[in-house]
Length: 148
Length: 382
Image 1 (cartoon, each protein chain N blue to C red):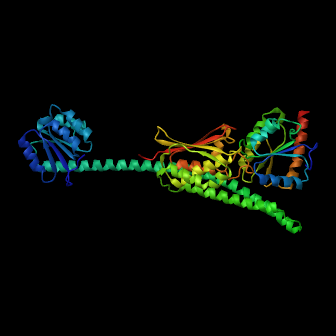
Image 2: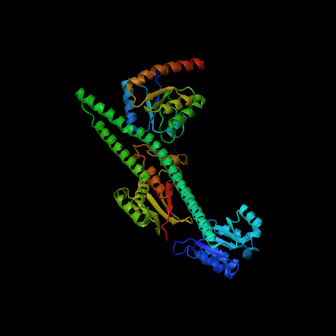
Image 3: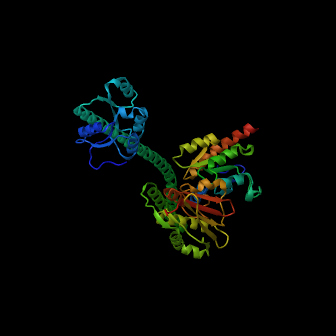
């Protein structure tokens, strides 16, 4: 990044408070200043995306420009969230970065199959996010070309 | 069946005349326990009362009942050898009996006492071998069944251990990640001679405590999985009183209102483990009751299945049925650690304990309507 253009909201789905602190630190380190919304489980992530319950006001909870999605989440796991988003036309090409732990080749494979090719490994460091920003820009350009 | 006190082989002699009986008894008496009868009805009764090695019958007596009597012998005493005494002119009939396996051998009359003795000895040895073989086959089948069931148990344990290992390596890494991150920040602060944020050190400490908790739960789970568990008659009343006592501080802080059943039952169980289950369920019921003083009801009932069902009902936040299966997983949690602290191992450990009691544990709940956690284990033998 250092900033998505226009500065879109980043939705971070992470149940572990320390991992979220580490993530925020990495965002600051990568000088990413987009607004960040944090939810703690897969069900809340889906509520947010589909403007349900306490997230029904789109002005306060805008559709994010990108999601960082932990895989091992309470209630609805990250893969299931990804599948639901990819099955919805509106979110079929929204960039979703899957957040994995180091020994999760199975998770990576399932994420590919479910529609994400973007990964970042825990603990997330600024360099990861800077590297990802290039990939996201390219993907967004490609999706704009396809949709156009 | 009765065995005769000395360990001589036992022979049933079904003879026709008293002279014949005398002669047969004289020939066999020194080497065998001999029981004599001239009645087929009596013989059939004796077959249910004693274990015979050899059944020696006279064809002249059993002629009419014939095959039927021999069949009864075979059904009731399959290991006994069947010998038939008969005149030489019945040779064809006797050979048919041998082919049809109605008898094991034929002794033509008049039979020489020495030949008779040797034939009965040989028949007795055959009978003993059959008995030994069938007993060995039985033992072998039992051993095979034991090995099979043990193998199944080991496969199950192995699968559970693999799953646990995967979960453990994933979850144990989390506090390590946190510790490393916050210590790095502290070191940076030292290097840059800036103020070290106290919160970072507190989070290192908290990560350490989590690690300790996770390891403690793992050890507890492994012990439950592989250790011996002593089950005996346990009064649930005592178990519950102890659990309530160990939670007394939380109960008084949160002004918990506990309602008890009128009677408690006794179960077949392990008191310290059951206390831990009750304590866990009660603590959860208190923690997840967020509006005002928790109202918790305890129930206890004997079922028609010979089990006792204990239930803990709260009026707390409840659990969406969609997530019921997740809550019993090791280190699984539905709610944020910030709001509801804990390792997420409590219910997994409770379930393992109840499994080791040959029982089941479950939940009835919907979101926003409280929850009833229950377990059902065998009642104490009366």
